[in-house]
Length: 100
Image (cartoon, rainbow, N blue to C red; front, side, top):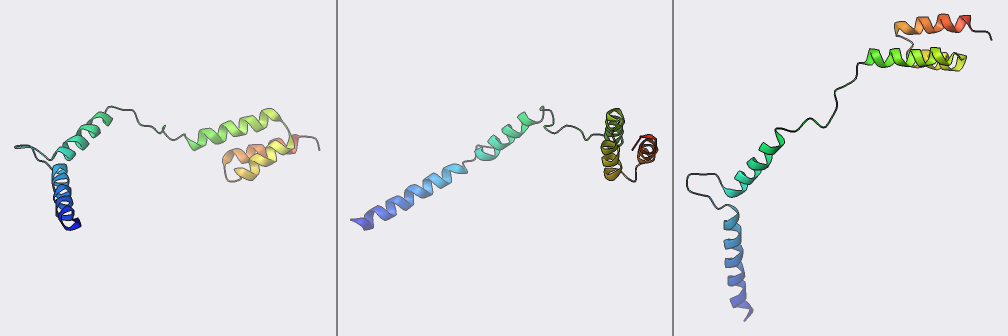
C-alpha cells in the first residue's frame, strides 16, 4: 500500500511546485510580479539613515563644550582626541592660561 502513496505524493509535490511558477499569458511569473509590486512601493519612502554629519562641525562643538567647561581635564581630553585639528592649538593656548 505504501507503493501507491509514494507516486501520488510525488505527483502532488510536482503540481504544487509547478504552481509556484505559474505564468500568465504574456506576463511574468506570478512570484516575480509580486516581488516587483513590493519593490515599487518602497521607491517613495524616505531613506532610513540620516545624512552623515560634518566632522569639522562636530569637532568645533566638542571644542566649545570643553572651553565652556573651562577645566584642565576637558581641554586635555579634547587635545588627546583631536590633537591634529587646528582647534587643538587654541585648546593648548587655553590650557596655558588656566591656573594649575
